[in-house]
Structures are given as C-alpha cells and as structure tokens.
Image (tube, rainbow, N blue to C red):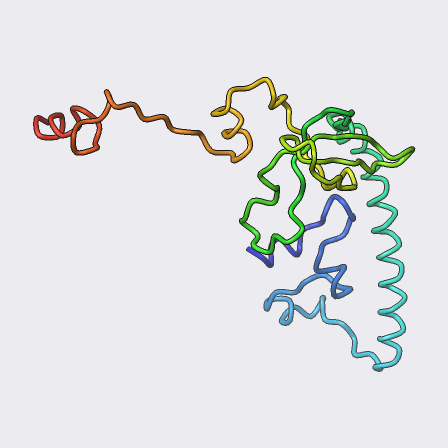
Length: 192
C-alpha cells in the first residue's frame, strides 16, 4: 500500500513522492530481469553531478506546480474563512500556558472580559469577568477564545455548563428511592 502511494503522481507537486525523494521512479523486482530497462553503469562522480542537477530541476518544477495549485485552490479555501472580531465587553477564555498533556483542556475554566485593545495590534487587555478587582492580563488574539453567549444574562447552571463544558445534572428527591437509585429501575429489571 505504501509503495503504491509513493509511486503515484501527486497533484500538488506533479511528481511522485518516491521520485522527489530518490530522483528516480520506483522499481519492482521484475524490472531487474528486463534488459530494455537496465541502466548503464556510471562513474560515481558523474552520477552524483547528474543526480544533483536532476533534483534541482525537479524541486524547481515541483515548487512552480505547487504555487499554481495554491492559486487555483485559493478562492475555494478563502470562501469560508471568517475572522472572529473581539470588542470591549466580549467574554473570552484564555489559553493555558502550562498545559503539557495533549488531551487536556487547553483553555482556562474561568471566563475573562475584554477591557481594551492596544492601538493597531491584535493584543487585548482582559481580566476575570466575575472579579472586577482582578489584575489585567495583556494577551495576543491567538491566546483568546471568544464565548458566543454573554454569561451575565444566564442562570448559574447554564454558566457552569458553558465554562466547564459539562452538563450540570440536577437531582430531585422525588426521582430517587431510599437506596439512591432511580425510582422503578429495579422493578423494571426484575420484570423484564
């Protein structure tokens, strides 16, 4: 499977990955037995010089082909690109700078409020939304994730759901029996 993938021509570069890596098309064992495809033996220095010239030409052709492909795909890729603007008063989450685990949540759980933007730069001053006495933090736009809802107009359970990313479960006494399980769950399992 890997051999087949490596020997097929790539649309982005116009060459196969094998050709870009080794400067020749891949060979299968049958190619060694066919006399028409046998290559003449070359002197080592002339082979290296010819190989370097060939690879320089191939890489230049690949760069040109790739730039043409990029220009062709540009309208399709930028059609859906949108920038999320931040304004004063927006609520954001801040990127954790000490997150080392790749599956860990990358964003701090407390929401921040945007207080101001530095003149002409994508740098914002933010502080904790719930604490008006908290210190300001100055962060680049890449370290901020805009929250789509205003947290101050929501009930506490909904705020916690948005902040933690987990649904808050509510338990009421009338749904539970004396043992703590859901009422009727044991009866259904015995009947069925």
